[in-house]
Structure formats: C-alpha cells, structure tokens
Image (tube, rainbow, N blue to C red):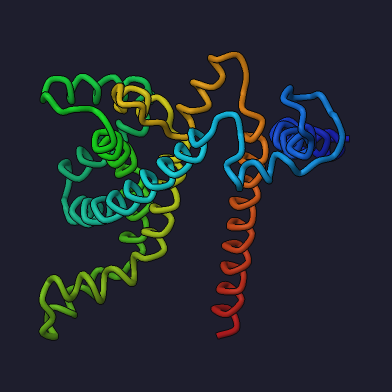
Length: 268
C-alpha cells in the first residue's frame, strides 16, 4: 500500500508540474486568441512566430533577441569572474574563507525584488543612465555567485599539488591557470554557465527595476506588459513550447553523454 501511495503521489506531483506545459503545447496548435478555446488544428501561430507576422509586431522578436543577448553576455562574464573568485575563495584559510563563502551565499538567498531595488538605487545614486548596460551589469551581479557555487566543489575534488607541480616545471601562473586549472574546472564552469544563463533568462524583478524608461524589453518584461493590456499574445504559446523542447533536448543530450562517460570510466 505504501508503494502504491508513493507512486500515486509522485505521478500526481509530476502531473501538476507538467500539465500546464502540455496544455500550452496543445493550444499552440490552434489559432484561437483565447487560451482554452480550441478552434481547430492549425500551425499558423508557429508560422506567425517565424515570419514576424503577429499583432505584437517586432516587439516579441526584439524581446527574445534582447533576452538571449543579455543572458549570453551575463553568463559568459559571470563564468569568468565566478571562476576566478572561486579560486580565490578556495585558497583562503580559516575564518576569511568562511566569511567569503557566507557573503557569496547572501545574494542567492536574497529575494530578487530586494536585489532589483538595491541595484536601481545604486545606479540612481551613481548617476548611471539605466538601459542595456545597467541590465547586463545587474544580471552579471546576481549570476556570479551561482558560478562560484558551481566551481568550488570541483576545486575541492582537484588534487591541489597539480597547480604547484606546473609552477615547479616552469609554467607561469597564467599558463598554469589556463592549461592546468581550467581543464580540471571545466565541468563546474559549464554547469555554472548553464545555470547563469538560465537564471538570466528567467529573471524579471531585477530587469524590471534596472531597465529604465527607454523601452528595453526582455521576454519576462514583455509578457508582464502584454498581460497588463488584457491578454497574452497568442504567439507566446508556440514560443514557450519551443523553449521547453529545446531545454528538454539539451537535458537528454547532457544526461546521455554523462552516462556514456561513466561507462567509459568503468570500462577502464
């Protein structure tokens, strides 16, 4: 009985998580502007999405482009900064190391709205014009701690003598970092990059408070503005479906590669 109840609970939880996604995917194949109103099978919304022939015009396309560009820049910069910061924190000793790890965890625990308001007030105090640059800086700020958290475990697993051995063999610190540390830390850096990219894509509060009044929109702020007008652009349904499928495919590919890597290591 316990096993049956556990399975029922698991399937109920999965249904609650994935039912909205399946619902959106199903109604992305109909032309109805109202969610839940099926007017017949059609791929017109997908055609509109790729051709830009929609009521929102270039607004949605521009929002997607801004979202991807900001996420890529923020993830790349935060990966570099977070990796360097993780190496510095790892080499600290005692209370200094604990204090830096504690300070690194605060931005992740801190609510997004507080981070957004704080950065907004900081930019106003510094007299920085809000727009593309401030949004990118804000995203780098809250993404970097996640990269640090992803890289630190790899540093703990690494043999600390490898770096010193490279220095003893004549490598400069920069060469040892590039040819010894980076290959060892690459899995953590990739995980940190993906996590930072995802966090940037998903962010709303920080972007909303730091984008200014120049009309800059990311996907999250576009959806918020669109919803306030009294409804959502129908082309958002196929867009959400495609994003979900891309993420699903990436996860499957990553898991398959990890399983193959584990089998290769075991066979050796």
